[in-house]
Structures are given as structure tokens and as C-alpha cells.
Amino acid sequence: MSEDRIVQSLADEHRIVTRLVDNVKSVVAVIPKVNRGEWLAGIRLEFGRLRVHMKQHIEGEETGGFMEPVLEHRPTLSAEVQNLKDEHLQFAKLLDGIWDELSSVTPEDDLLIADMCHRIQHVISAIERHEEHEELLITFVFSQDIGGQY
Ligand SMILES: [Fe+2]
Ligand SMILES: [Fe+2]
Image: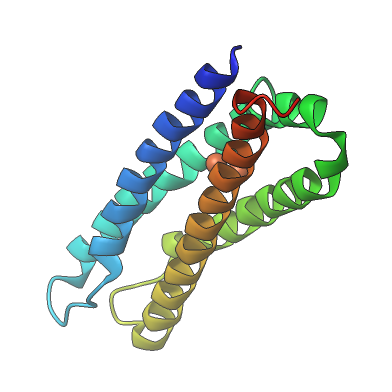
């Protein structure tokens, strides 16, 4: 894959993640007092989509995605790449933990719902920081090549 193609395909993938993240954010922004059953079903739907997509996204980055070319170009960045991989593992755990809770929480569980929404917002912020970090990393690696410094 060419460098332009790697940068472009990561940007395309991240646009999809952003759309799914925004959908989840808009559902958890306000906890309604009525129709909570329906609202919870909406969270399950949107969060479920994000969770499934993140697993595919992570798999794609680690196998056949940007990580291998980055390491080939800049082996000195192996700690950075490892850190991103470590975060991938933690995302999988966090997303699975929230997903399990989403299947057991009931509309009356005020405290559990509030806690779950905080955790959803927390993992979303972490995902956003992570994706930004990846884009900065590949821009740094490949723009140096494009600039002819190598
Ligand atoms: Fe990633
Ligand atoms: Fe990513």
C-alpha cells in the first residue's frame, strides 16, 4: 500500500468511527425521565454498532493496516505503536464490560444508568484521543518521507 493510500484509508476509517461515536454521544447526552426502556434500546443499538466496528477497526490496524508500514519506516517508534496496541486491548475490555452491563441494566436503575453513561463517555473520550494520536503519528512518519528527508 502506498503512503498516500495508508494515510487516506486511516482517515476514511476514522470518519466512520467518528460518526458512530457521535451517534452514541447523542443518545447518552441526556438521561430521560420517561420512556427509558426505549432509550436504553437506542443505546444498545448505537453502542453495539460502535463496539462491533471498533473490533474490526482495531483488527484492521494491527493486521494489514498502518502499524506495520510505520514500524518499517521508523523502527524507533516501536514503543509508540506498542502503546497504541495496548490501548486497543483495553478498549476491547472496556467496551465488553459496558456491553455486558447494558444487557442487565433496567429502566429503574437510576444510579447504574448514570454510572454506565459516565463510563460510555469516558471510553469515547479515550477512543477520540487514541484516533487523534494515530493520525498525528502517521502524518509525522509519512510527511517526513514526502518532504524528502529520507
Ligand atoms: Fe487504533
Ligand atoms: Fe484508529
